[in-house]
Image (tube, rainbow, N blue to C red; front, side, top):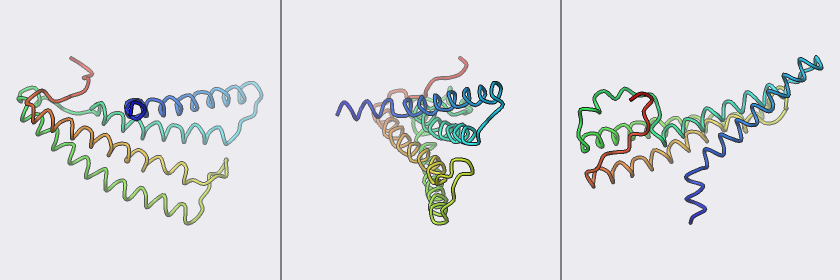
Length: 170
């Protein structure tokens, strides 16, 4: 049980760290190869590109978890705990609906890519592994939205302040 809790708390962090390290190391190697040896490879560019794509989608799920997406919250400062919780619940439900539709269509894209056997230009491996970044990201977002929804329902029930995440400026 503790292992699952630890995964739930840190899974995106470890994924982000892995993709970021892969991106930076590959980019450094490619710059070194290009500047020192006057040689570069197409696979390095692809690894960096696809690592960045995974970073973006996993990062979006982290933003949902931490309520760190850009938002205009001027109205929220004037609301009490109950209306604020209701507004956040409404926002989570809308985002949940959008994420479900996007997940459906992103899986469709993966299936089409698998059906036609598209491969990357340099690595010559199936593009499915890289296109999967989108459904993986939306699946993580849906999971985090469900958690956020339950957290907000508890706050509404208990009459306490809803979790708002960290603000950029205070």
